[in-house]
Image (cartoon, rainbow, N blue to C red; front, side, top):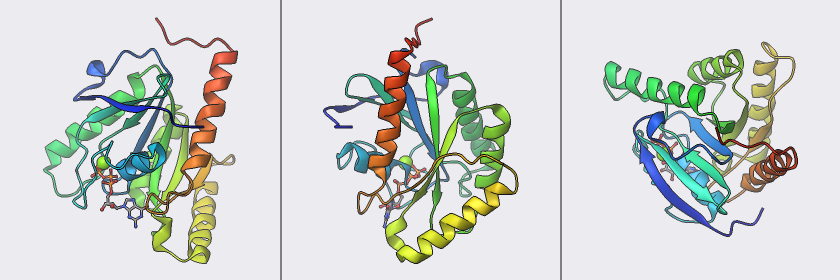
Length: 207
Ligand code: GTP
Ligand code: MG
């Protein structure tokens, strides 16, 4: 997919305040600092469309970007950020889960995980919750430039084995680097194909 336009629409503190749900939407989620905002910028070929930071907890609101005037890309706050109070963390969780469960035009969630680590409990729990809640999702390995290619593959296979313990059918998995701008094209291809499918089948999100 060629990105002709990518514009920031708005930041919302709750799902009810998000832009009108009339276009297909794809959202990025994952632990704080995993690289959600950076990957959005890499895919959109835009240095600072989504705000990034070395300090976890940068994205605290739901941020909507309109792409090619016909679909939304959404940057969500990270989950599991340890350095905020328990009650604030609960508020973030509620914001995220309410958004996911209520946003009727949400077509697919991309769950980002750091390619350097073994499967983390918090991510596996979140993935489990998505499965149980019937939320369509894919998994995205981030920061693959920080490892040797062989190590990325090893961790990738390891992740698949971990998921196979629970799931027979695995979701789509992508390996990306925002730094090297790799892997984002595959995600865009998936979005493009899905959007075509929705158009061909006259799926409309208007109420
Ligand atoms: P929150 O908004 O806090 O939830 O974080 P986020 O998931 O949006 O992460 P963000 O994109 O802000 O990136 C966090 C840090 O990781 C920044 O210092 C980025 O430069 C770095 N980073 C993100 N993606 C990559 C990548 O692909 N490679 C490398 N080497 N660094 C990355
Ligand atoms: Mg962010």
